[in-house]
Image (cartoon, rainbow, N blue to C red; front, side, top):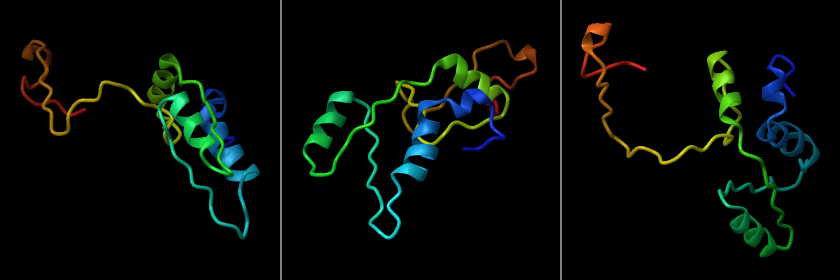
Amino acid sequence: MAADRPRAWRELDATVLQAALLGELWRRPGGPPLRVRHLHGASAAVTQAAGSVDGFAVLMRAAREDIVRALAESGVTMPHKSTSFGPKPATGLLLRDLRDPGEGRDPIVERI
């Protein structure tokens, strides 16, 4: 596991799943790779795992917002598939900043 990452990142369920379990313990050298699917509901994951001879489900806790925010503010990216926020804006949706343009912002476009 990446020792250069903050402790909060190393303790995320998604980090443990990716680095320790999928990356080391459950790796099958010489065999077919694991087929991993990320589902958003526990019942769907359990149902799908039960329908397979060698299937299993890993249920993870959601990353807390304060941890996600703290890691982002310190420049640390989250592990793959560790965050899922909704509702998601539609593709191509334009968001307009309605704050006073006197605050040094163009009222139509702001780079994030």
